[in-house]
Length: 115
Image (cartoon, rainbow, N blue to C red; front, side, top):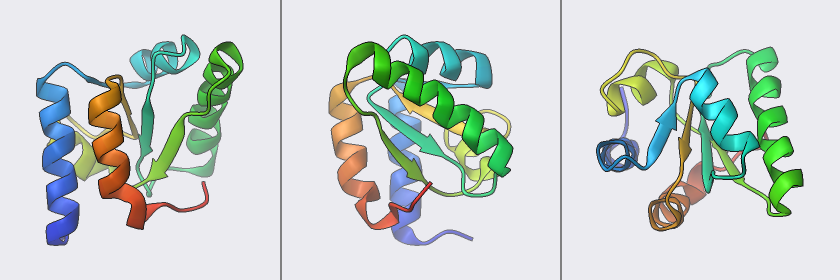
């Protein structure tokens, strides 16, 4: 079960996805992160350390390419992230629009963890 704050964030992630400004799935996330087109990375809290490291490596490759750091948040579960965007379980979601990313960063600030 999720709190009201978490529900709002999940709904906003869904809005970004419906607007075509969110990428999910390992291949699409990898490409978007490595090409430096990502503005925000959201990773499910319940993925394995190995999966987390792989996703963060993709983000690091994008950071080196663009010279800018991508903010990363560990939030919710694979099931909830997938449900939010109308898909099956998702370990990571990349936000590609700066405006959506900025608003989500504000909303996620209380959820920032060391990842």
